[in-house]
Image (cartoon, rainbow, N blue to C red; front, side, top):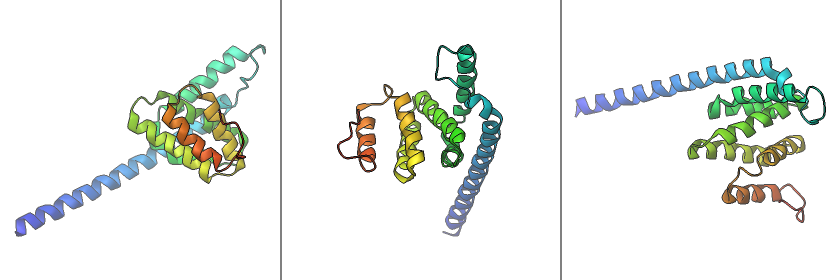
Length: 169
């Protein structure tokens, strides 16, 4: 009985150590993400709204590559991405939206996609008007990427914060 108790205590200690190491690794990934986000903010804020401008193609390519690079961090950086989306700076929020959208687009793993999608809905539900506008932009970017069930879930959350008779298509 004493051996079994000792084994259980050792197993719990090992599990706790793994949790601490995992949290430390996540913290390190979030720090690296923020550093890279800071380095890429100029690329993230390149104008890509007018296809007729002379630098459109180059800007679009550079901005897209920056977004893709940051989205590769995946769901582990959701805390850092949330802080970025909560920023009072519109350029930071817009960059975060692009990364969120790319992360959702990249996720074929149902569990990861669900986690990212749920986080985005929670941020919309908890956020201020500025954050909600940015998150709505994310939904516009990905309008064809959502399942019927995801659209329904989003509409339920949106209706809490948007005029009741608004067209949510």
